[in-house]
Image (cartoon, rainbow, N blue to C red; front, top):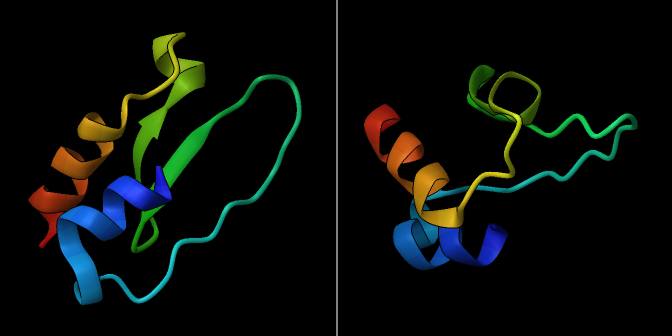
Length: 58
C-alpha cells in the first residue's frame, strides 16, 4: 500500500503510518479523514482504490 502511494504521489506525501490493530479492522485515514474501512466493506482495499481516494483529497 505504501509503495503504491509513494509511486503515485512521490514527494507530495510526507509520510505513511501503519498502525496495527486487532479483530480484522483495517481502516485507512488521510489527513484525519477516514477514506476506507474494511469493517464497513468487509473487504481488504486494493492499492488503486486508496490511491484514488487520496487523489480526491489533493
